Image (tube, rainbow, N blue to C red; front, side, top):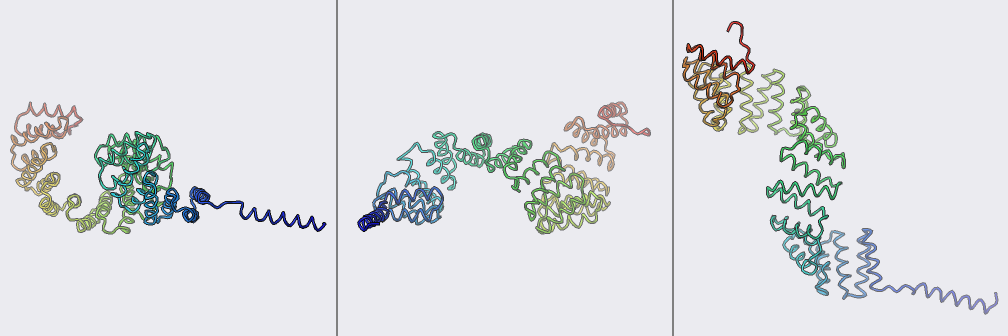
Length: 474
């Protein structure tokens, strides 16, 4: 190559190199744009470097300070972010996004009062932005200002009725306010807008459960499981819904699935034990209660449940010891003493059953069923006067309670042959439930013993129409 041509070539290369080195002008706008690109990809640290470069070149750019704050927020450096937002607002107090972002930073720091104040500034500048109203509503809810929160959420929904999060939050607050019907409407709207929202479906299931609409609850929990098959709480709630529907075996299968996901969940073991017991699988139930107790030895209800399973197997001595353990853990729970007395009764130990229930009614004199059973066991000991007093106490506590009325009449006959009082008691039982066959039979027997044959026959005829079959010897 001729010398002149070489010189020209070198010159061109030099010019080319100089142009490539200085062709890009690294301005403040360039760095801010690069920062925005990294923000979109979630690279907050790199974005922060870019925004810092932008600010070095132009420290009066309110937007760059705001973006720096957003990058810091993405890194969860909320206190540093607030400094950047304040710089942005000082440069341009009309930058609504900076106020909004500042509100979010305060919310992350759980400073909800300052968060609300920032959201309100954002709303003043741009009142039609739904997200600002929504975020204000969330902050108000965190302060327990539920009525104000609902108003803010309604403002968000007015501006964007497809904002599923606002509907969901509103539903939860309405539920806390006891407005279950309105809450249900809001939850239905949430899942309509966001069909894959497992939290909303779960909350919908809870709402239906609270309304005792277990079939609808079951559908909601099934939807949660469709979305997330390893959601153990959804499997547990599904099991509870099936339990309430009387589908005990299906319920147990649901609890078992939850336990495959969360094998150390004592509550799920206990629920499964209950489902197994109600489905008649008593030995399996006992094993599940054992696992519950292993995980939670102070769970009185589990000891009681296991005792009930042993009682179903007619192992009453074992069940009594377990009832005693439940009582030791929680002596205030009437049901445990009541169940122990039932087991003692099955063993024919009426004196001890009476002693247990006497202690029980001392602690809980409002327990009508305890008074009724105390009367039964006293009657078995032929202590008819005290038995009648116990029945009277049960009736006083619950005038619509049929059993003590019927039992009172029997004690009047057995203890005193007071047929007049007995008939009054049986009539009271019949008044409560005109279709109570046993009360009609008892009345007929009392009338017969009183020598009132025609009236007795009429009572027996009524009992027969209700299904009574008299013995041939009667």
